[in-house]
Length: 270
Image 1 (cartoon, rainbow, N blue to C red):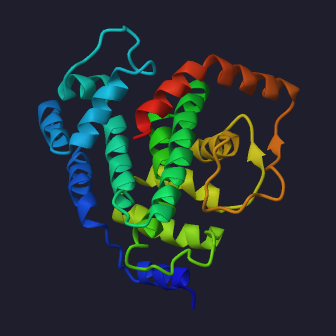
Image 2: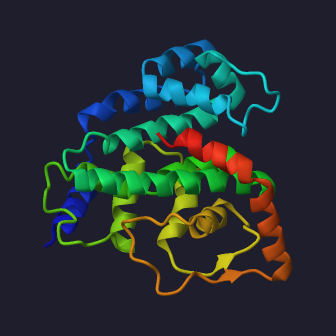
Image 3: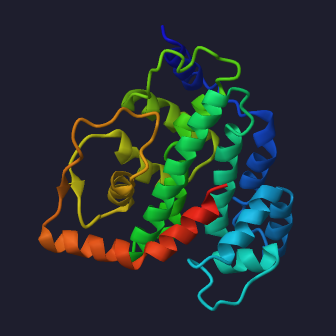
């Protein structure tokens, strides 16, 4: 049995463990799940995780969210502008990033960094596409942030499992589905977000315009020029079920949203 298969088996037996340095961010993420949490309390919880606090303020002041051009300088004002649902997604992003944030191996540090570049670009694309197709932008971005959770979790285990990925093996769709499902459950990711990610682990035509968040996330994952370093290059690009009018519409969306995409990607990339 390979090292990868060993870990997949452990996860399926309920042995999901997060690195110590991700614990604070994980506790913050769970605290924000309280639907009754007041804005002031949410801000207080977020300040306990400085990296998250900095990201919340930076995003609130980005081109994507600062329509008025008036900056906010505090976490409470930033949360009010972004909304708690969006901030919950950012809190999960911090957990994701910190899972692989203190790796000792330069090679695995590089692997994690490249996977994060892919992740944030997909998340930003998902957000702006969802806004254009009226498909819940905050949920789409959250799904984009966590769609590579299996890869981050496995990379975080390489400090104690040095044989993992040592043979150059990449994630199979089956391993990604099995690891991803277990870790998403451990992170208490909402069912609607999990439902948006699951189509990435399945075969089938890519529909345009997207009919649901699953379609939209697959579209964002296909459109990004930054490919996941854990997945083998596809023998051929996935065929888009799209006619000339659809191609024109998609090109216009991407062109009109280029500044927003850059701002959102920059704010998420840390």
